[in-house]
Length: 128
Image 1 (tube, rainbow, N blue to C red):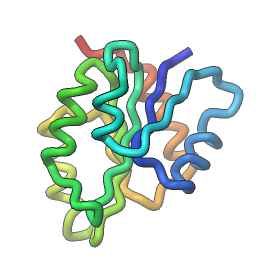
Image 2 (image 1 turned 90 degrees about the vertical axis):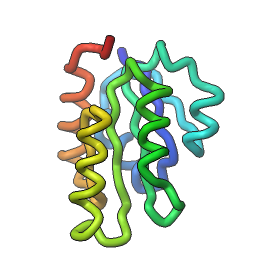
Image 3 (image 1 turned 45 degrees about the vertical axis):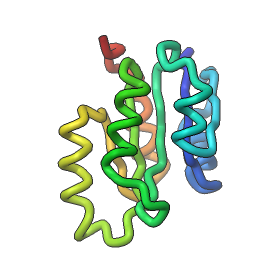
């Protein structure tokens, strides 16, 4: 059983994650914003954090840095809704790599891809 925190998820992402976790018994928490999650969460007890990054919400690399800093021992999955994935995707992926975020999925995301990514993330050893 894993402790999972989902941040900034819209209805589609919540449904997708629910479909990706059938039959698995996990403790799943939701937070509306990264700031709320940072203030309320006990980061050391989390196994996985899934954060939806939305470019139009004025989220930038500093939000990803805060995510990694706050949840330093958790495995991270970032889903990204970018204005123009073709133009912004390469820069975004570079930042994700530099911050050692385990997985990044550009929207739209298929259920199978989310299931595989969650299973892969949970199979990784916890970060020191």
